[in-house]
Amino acid sequence: FDIAHLGGDHVVASLVQFTGGVPNKDGYRRFRVRGPDGDNDPGNNDFAAMREVVGRRYRRLIDEGTPLPDLVLIDGGHGQVRMAVEALEEAGVLLPCIIGLAKREETIIRADGAEVVVSRRDQGLKLLMYVRDEAHRFCRRYFHLLQRKALDQPPAGSKGNNLRRSRRSLPRNR
Image 1 (cartoon, rainbow, N blue to C red):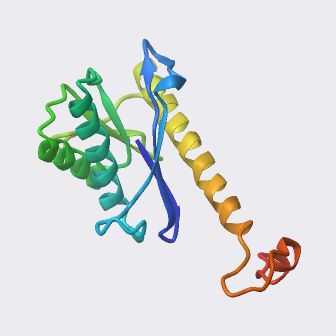
Image 2: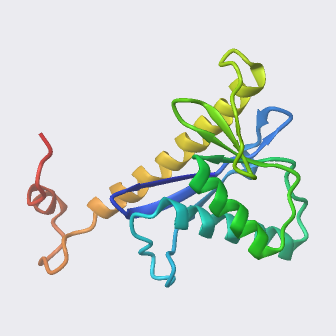
């Protein structure tokens, strides 16, 4: 799982699925984070977003009777892992293994909060990094898609549907 947003706008999440160390793209999922009130405004809270998305995903799997994964990898550290574990407990889901992978240090965070440090040359860590990076790529792609859609909408209160004029009225980043 990964979360992406820009200052709390267009908060999205992704889920990628690997089987036997190979991406299973049929199992990829993307989510719009709804927020605590279901109003699509979760704000700038990665922890709450992770809790919501993990809970939604595994409640659905339980309802459908779909087999659960052997491992859940969270892109993040202690806070994100803690929220994912709480969401699973609330949903009544018992998973054999849930871990997080903290960026930069590439530290593995276990569900109990313990940190596991392995060599960066370790093949298992390289696979976890690949899975995490794929979730990140898939999430960013969805985030950018929603951003482009939002830019293609004329500003509220504008007359007509002249997108060229609408885009000119937006501030430029230089």
